Amino acid sequence: MAARTPATPKRKGRGGLRILIALVVVIVLVAAGIVTLGVIASADTTVGAVLTTFVPDASVAHSGGSFSSAASGTFVQPGDSVKTDAKGRAQIQFPDGTITRLANNTQIAINSSHFAKDGHVHDISVTDKLGRTLNSVQKLVGGATFQVVGNTTTASVRGTLFEVLVNGDGTVVIKLFIGGLDVDGKSGHVHLTEGQQVTVDANGNIGAPGPITPDPNDPFGQEVAAMQQVETQTTPGTEQDFTGGLLHNGQVQQFTYAFAAPSAGGSDFKAALAYPGSLMELRITDPANHVYTKTGPSPIVITIPDPPGGIFKLDVIGVSGLDPNGEVPFLSVATLEPCATANIELNGAVRHSWTGSDLAGAINVSGLSNVKINIVGDTTGGAIIDGSATYNGIGLAGTLLLYAHSGNIGVIPLAASAFGFSIPPQQAGQQIASALGQDPSNISLGFHVERLFTCQNVLMIEGRTA
Image (cartoon, rainbow, N blue to C red; front, side):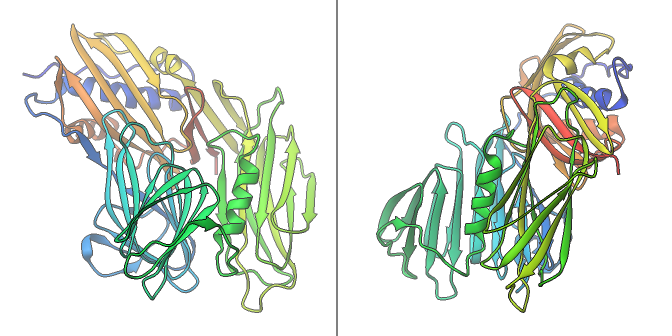
């Protein structure tokens, strides 16, 4: 049995962007009423990740095939492998904001990636075959798991930020920067607490945990320090990290960050530059052409209170003492901003944000009533949106996951139901594609999306017009 296809939503409220987001929500809600019932949805949905290449080259092997060079924005799925060359730096990001960052000469494989019907991670498993990864894992709920497997060792997350190094001789070094971590090997099990590391030999024998020791070959130690600096007194989800190419003495690399600052003030712009034991300079030019500059030991931190909105230019300058082969700078940027409804387009920067009530109020579909939209909690990447409604007397409900990639957004339907029956998310996805006339994994909002997150139950989408 199938319900009638609802009428096309009519514009209501401000702007096409708001209507587009509302339309996406509506389609998930009513998808259950316009697909054939009778097939029960699986408990979890397989979800991929998006590759970002910071420094060429990164390569991807799909489904066990051969490796080929891959550009930023490439989707990787369970069964795929990613590797970097001698100078390469890259990362993969899952829709909830969980990130695995690859140093040079590193190879990983994605074993599994499932999201539950409620929008949260069910399980993610990555094998670190060789090299060094930094794993930033978002909050896990219920029995969710995130694991990194290296040789004979498995690291299971209880915390948020840890590093895994798999050496060519099969030994594995694991460092925990934030949270808690369980390490399992052939000799047994140890639990790491924040600030500890452990070494596992090639046969799986786990050594005794101890404090993290300096490693001149580890690029992630300084980078973690920079990230922690900008995460202090800023809004989670606004952080954007940049890994530069090889920088030499006297050279300049420029990065940009779009921030549509609220006109009422009360916001901050914060940047931290990390680099090896040389001397670099950080220079920031705000949208009003005010210049802020600083040199000193890594990480260099600059905070701009109540900045003007627009495009910020961040120059990293190699001053002296850089390695003759060049050094890779790392820049972390975040802002303090209110978690509130906004519609700001200022000097090329864009910020649009909505509550669930805002989205529900933008929906005007004949026969659809009792619309309730809920933006779930706080996420630093992606957004979980669920809702319910009645369509011509039929009770409908659905959950979807929004995420940003390559300047656009993607939509992943995770659950849909009608008459109390579950509908396969794949069928809901087909209905979204049909209604929007766009690939649900690559929807244009009319501007370049850089960040998508939720903040105190507010959906935040930020980017630039060019």
